[in-house]
Amino acid sequence: MDIQAQTQQMLSIIYQIPVGIVQTDKRGAVQEMNAMAIQYLMPHFVANQLTGENLFDLLSVVFPNALEALKSYQKPSGNILQQERFSVNHNSQNPATEQHLILTINRLDEKSYLFILDDLTELYKKEQQLFAIQQEQAVERGKFEVISGVLHDIGNAVVGFGSYLTKVKQLTKSNDASLLSKLAQFVKANEAAIGQAIGTPKAQAMVQLIDGLKAKQEDHTAKMEKAITDQMNIVAHVKDVLNIQRQYIGSESGERSLVSLRGIINDALAMQLATLEKRNIEVQTFMPDRLPPVKGDHTKLMQVFLNLIKNSVEAMDQQGGDGHTLSLELTKEQDCLVARVSDTGIGFDKPQKQQMFQRGFTTKPMGSGLGLNGCQSILQTHNATIDIDSPGPGKGATVTITYPLTEP
Image (cartoon, rainbow, N blue to C red; front, side):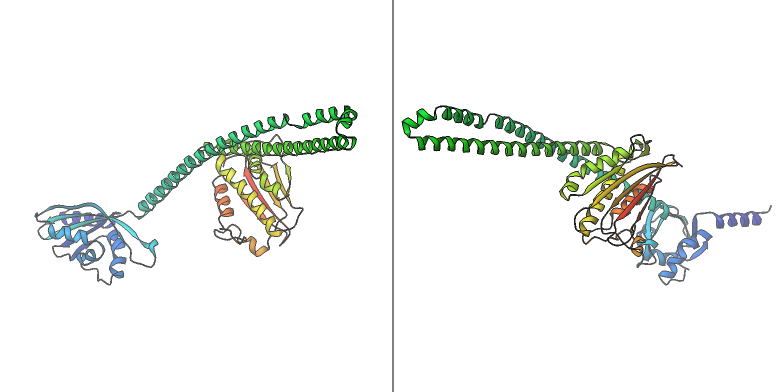
């Protein structure tokens, strides 16, 4: 093969390689430009109303630092820039069109330059995604640390309050009712003698007064003991909720392990129990004891069911009235566990159903529209599905989660 043919073959290879290559004269006039360089640069020439004949003209607009480096370079040949990154956007109205390039400039001789370009846009996007994930994880870790500290402080306060209630309950046992009872018996036994000393009417009045004081003290003591018992039950419930919270805060989000959906649903229900009781909402559950575990993120799945129960409570608040019911069902159907959360709340119509999982859509006056969309996102990462249905406005709704028992 002669030199001319070899040269032509080499130029053909250079033209096709997946890196942009441009050769210019000392004033920036383009002498050679391969296919990839044309693909990278021509949209920016057009966007800036340039002919594409002079690369320096484009650099003065999109990467002036490179042009400054060229002008200040005094050696007859050598490397001027080595893999310098820069960003170009040929559509300022659409940030998504931003292109991230890496540029190397070599001076071939006193009359020519060689520019080597590569597109790092996809790599840049992945770097940004990774950075966002790392930032989110850092924020989550910070939240966990703060929440753990708060839970610890609340736990200490609750324990102290519980101890105080126990002491108060013990004090009520050593009350004055027993002393009044003994005094009443003594006065009755000696009513005749007391009557001779102070008069019968006064003695009878004394007996009645002491009997009244005794009855009042016994009633007061009974009410106090009941109030203390109720408070101690509330404290016990708060302790249970705190223990559940610690369990979920302590688990590292993102880890997948075998978990009990039944246990997660029961924990979510326990944490909402006070809210349900306050609203007189009847809770019905159907969850057999022996159900197989699933592989998932304990904390994220807890968030899903807490959100669904909270949504149901708010839907029943919007519906108004009494006699509302929250139903939780978990069954094994073929190779899946199917969870259903049903309420007697405000419900919705068919057009609304199409929007239920859209980010930002909400039927609540103060809602953010992130709840169901967030639940769907979490469940999708677990290869599970979520659906919501309603017979119509005012007729409640049912959320159905289908969770595979085997990984795909």
